Amino acid sequence: MSSPTAFRYETLFARQSAEPRPVGQPRRGKYDFAVAYPDPASLPLDELVAGLRDALAAEGRDLAIYGHPQGYRPLREYVANKLARDRNIHVDADDIILGDGSGQPIHMVCETLVDPGDVLLTEDYIYSGTLAQMRRFRADIRGVPTDDEGMLPDALEQIIVQARSEGKPPKFLYTVPTFQNPQGWTMTLERRKALVALAQKYDMPILEDDCYVDLRFEGQDVPSLYELDGTGRVMYVASFSKIIAPGMRLGYLTAPRELLNRALAAKSGGSVNTFAAFAVHRFATSGLSSHIEVINDIQRVKRDAMLAALETHFNGDAAWSRPEGGLFIWLKLPDGADTAAVRDKILELDDVGYHAGNNFAPDMVSGKNYARLCFGYNTPEEIGEGVARLAAAFRREGLL
Image (cartoon, rainbow, N blue to C red; front, side, top):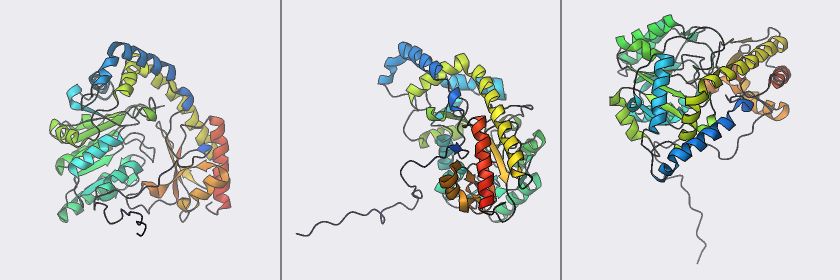
C-alpha cells in the first residue's frame, strides 16, 4: 500500500477568502518607527491591576457567563459619557458596540455594507489596516487628494460624480480627520463642513475614525464629523489602544440603530473580553483623564525630538509634517526615491523600522518616496539616534 500524499488546501479556498499572511513574529527594529505604539514606560499597569482587582471582587463571578454581545455595559456607559463630554456626541449605551480595538468595528461595517466592486473613498494615503479590510471585501478603493488641511472638497466631489456616472455611487467614505494616519494633519473645520455637505448632497455615508483625537499636544479641538452632520450619515469608531494600551484590544462603534443591528449580527466571537473590559472600565472612570494629560506631555517631547532630529540629519533634503498631536510624522523624500525597496535592508543593517508610503496608498503603488515615522515607542535619545541612522542609510542607498 502506497503512502498517502500530503493534503493540499489550495483548491478549496473560498473566492472571498483573505490574501495569505505569513505566520511568525515580525522583526522589530531597536529604533522602531514602524508601528504606532504608545510609550511603554507610561502604561498604567498598577492602576489597571488595582481596577481589575476591584472589579473581580464585585463582579468576578459574572465571568462564568458569556457577556452581552455589545460588550460590558458599564464600559459602554462610560464611552457614552466620554463622547458627550469630549466630542459633543450624544448617544446612550445601547448605541455603542464594543469591539476588539477599532479594527473589528471597521470590519463589521465593511461586512455589513460592502459588496465586491463597491466604490469606497479614502484619503490619498490612509491607515493600511483599513485598506486591508476594504480589500478583504474586494472593494474598489479610490483615494482623494489632500493637503495640510485634509481632503480637497473639489477633488472629492469630482470623484463622487465620476463614480456615480459609472453607476457605482460610493458606499461610504472612510476618513481619519484628526492626526491623520499616516499624514499627521488635522482636517480643518471648514473642510469638515464641506465634507459633510457633500455627503448630504450625494447621500453618502461617512465612517469617521477618531482613534487619535485624545492625543492633542497643542492647538484647539475640532468638532467631529458626527457632530457636524446630525442626519445619521456618520458612523464613528474610536479606541482605547493609544490612550491605554493596544494589547487591551478594546474599541467601539456608534452609528444609527439600523446599521448597528446589522453590524452586531456580523460581529464574530460574541462579546469582547469581559476581563479586559473590567480593567479598562475601572481605570477609565478613575484615572483616564489625568493619564491622557501625562502621556501627551511625554509624547510632545518625543514628537519634538523627532522633528529636531529630522531638521539636523536630513538637512533640507526631505520634507515632513509637523503634527499637533497623534503619533505620526509623514516624511517625503525626493521624487524617484523608493523607501519600499530598501526597507528590509535598513531594518537588517541599521536596526531602524519604518513603513513605506505605498503601504498607505489605495493603489499600493503610489507614495514610494514617502515613509511613516512613529515617535511613540522609543525614548527621545533613541529617536535622535534612530533618525540619524535612517538619514545615513537613505544616503547610503542613494535616496537622498
